[in-house]
Length: 176
Image (tube, rainbow, N blue to C red; front, side, top):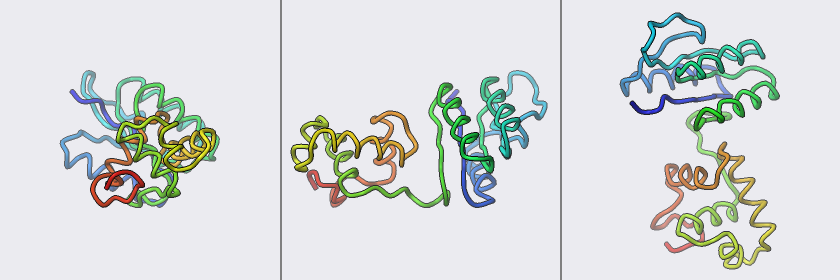
């Protein structure tokens, strides 16, 4: 079976409900609460609010137990950041900040760097084409990963591709 989603949503109320409805529509079994009793062996996605460290611990334990998560994060930023970091040890995390349907924005240089990397250029080559110092390109790439909510460059490229940032007419600075 596919890996169950780990989703952390910071932003407007209702984003977790919309995400739960979307997952139900794709065949996932969605259960309210991180501690809700579920028959052993069933794979479910648990939905709940993380308002503080105890809620975060319950969510993390549910994920460790094999559940998918949809977290409506209302706790302080340190608690949310720690939860996301802990969840990333278990698998990829879809961490969304702000409006759930609004795509993140990157400065044109960061977007161009991701575009060149997607085309197979090295970071040094991309920096050269853009007339940037390698260190500046490193910083732009790190900022892009942070903005996209991922740890690895390959994840940033994949997310940018899902957002439709590359391809003919994308204007990322590479071919097209």
